[in-house]
Length: 479
Image (cartoon, rainbow, N blue to C red; front, side, top):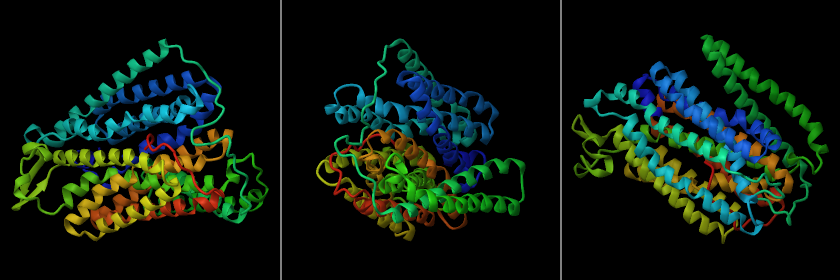
C-alpha cells in the first residue's frame, strides 16, 4: 500500500509510512483493553468482538475509496488492526487450553500454520488491485479497485463471525499460558541494577511512542515545525525524567508478583519493539527498493512470468527496470522465504536453545542489512531476500522467551509484549525519511540498528533469566 499511496497521493516515503503507523497504533491502543475485556467477557465474546471489528474495518474501505483521502484509508487500517489485536491476544491462549496441555504446542502450531498461506498470496492478490497497468489508467484506476480485496475479506470475516456466534464454545479457565512452564517458574533475578536499566529503556520507548502519537494528531492543526519539535521533545523528555525518578524507588521494591521484576521480560518488550520496527520497515519499503535500487535486469526477464508478464517490467532510458506490478511478484517470493524460514526454524528450535537461535539470526540480519546499505549490486538484492528468511522466527521466539517461567503472570506479560509492536508504527517513518533524503538502500541502516538490539537480547537472555535455555518452542504465528 505504501508504494501505491506514494503514486496516487504524491506522498514522500516518510509520509507513506503513516500506513504502518496507523496499523500498529491499533495494536498499541487495543492490547490492554482486549486483555481486560476478554477477562471480563470470556474467550468467545472476545473472539466475536475481534471478528466484528475486523469486518467493519475492511468494509470501511468501500466509502474510503470514494472519499479518496489519505486519512480515510488510514482509519480503515487502524480499525482492522484493532480487531486483529483481539484475535491475536485471545485466540492463541484459547487454542493452548482447548484440550490436553500435553498437546498444546501441537494445536497452536497446526492452527497458526495456516497464516503461512497469506504471506506469499497477499502480494499476488493485492497486486491485482493496487497496481493497474498504464493502459488502465495507472494509480487512479488502481485506487478505484483498492476496496475490492478489503470488501471480500470483510464479508468473509463477517461470515466467520456468524459461525462463531452460532457455535457453542467452552469458556475455559487458563491454568498456564503457552510459552510458560508451570514446572519452571522463575525466581526474581537478584540483579536489580540491570532490570532498572531495562525498565528505564521501556519508559523511554513508551515516551517516544506516545510523543509520536501526539505529533500525529498535532499535524492535523498545521503547526509550525518549531512547535512540533518542541512538543515532541517535551513529550519524550518529561515522562522519561519522571520515570527515571520513580523507577529508582519502585524497581528495588518490586515483588515477584510484578512481571516487571523479571529482566528477561523487561528486555523482551524492548526487543519486540525494535524487531517489529525492522520488520515493518523492510516490508513497507520492499516495493520502493525493487523498483528504484535494483541493478538493470537481464533481457530474459522482460515480460517473464516471475515479474508478472508484460506489466512487470519496463524499459527506461535503455535500462530494463521492475514495475510496481512486478514488485508484487518479487514480494511474494520474499514472503515464501519468510514461510520457509518458519518451517526450518521450527525444526531448529526443537534442537537448539531459542535464545541462541534468536541472537544468531539477529546477527545475520545485521550483516544482511549492512550489505543492502552498501549497495553492492545483486549481492545486496540477495541480502534483502535472505533477510525475510532470517527474521521469520523472531516475533514468536521473543514472545516465548519473554513470558518464559512467568506462570499465570504470562497473561499480563503477553499484553505488554503485544503493545511493544508499536515500534512498527514509529521507526519506518525514520526509514522513509532517510530514503527521501538519500536513497532507499541507505534507509536500511534503520532496521540494521534494530536487529542489533534483537541479537543483543538473544545472546543476553540466559543472563537476564538465570536459565540455561529454552528448547522446543513454537515458531509460527504473530508478525
